[in-house]
Image 1 (tube, rainbow, N blue to C red):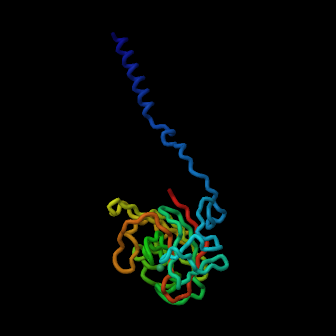
Image 2: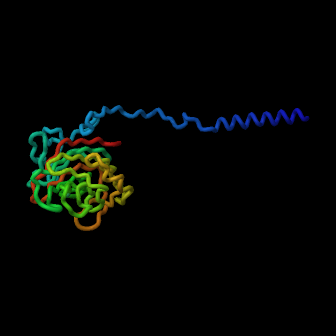
Image 3: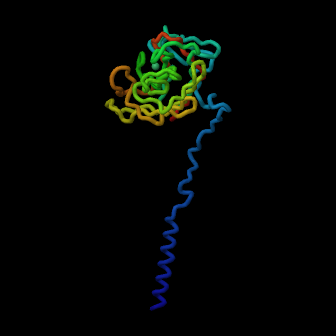
Length: 258
Ligand code: MG
């Protein structure tokens, strides 16, 4: 009888150890082999487009762009010496293509001889999604904020009238500056109500200035921002009505994110 009890105890011990061994996490449990990320060749200078980018301006022409207020017309801003200069008489321009979530790179330059003060000194803007004519959309402000005070949620790098940049990373007028943006578009329910707000991360001259912030809605000059249902949208550049010298752009590319 005693031998039988010992045998049963030993058997149970082995069985329990086996079960515990089966349940113990293994390193393989958290190692996945598919889907395999696409291979992308990084540029030597990371301002240059990676291999899978859509080139929105390559220095040659504005074929990828149209006038915002009449999208049947070509974007006739000035292209010279591989750069675009804002044509204030023609209004905003936007991409022919529409986008949802993306990574975007853009370079801009305030003229060295810029004049004006506050919001009237090299004002332009990158609309992360254009949702109508004029300035309808979500504006990442472009302005000379090197040594030019204005309301902080309207300086360069602000999400206009919503969020000031974390730091002021401006270079002086005459220097090329970079925006690198990760944009997650808002999502809407069928009834038009907001499902998830837009989010954005922005690097300005390589410095983090907007850290995955949640937008309050589309940009408004007067009044509180709010959301209105929209789908994929063009990217838009602003021809601001101030009288200062027009600013320039170059090297614009985008990587849609699925
Ligand atoms: Mg602006």
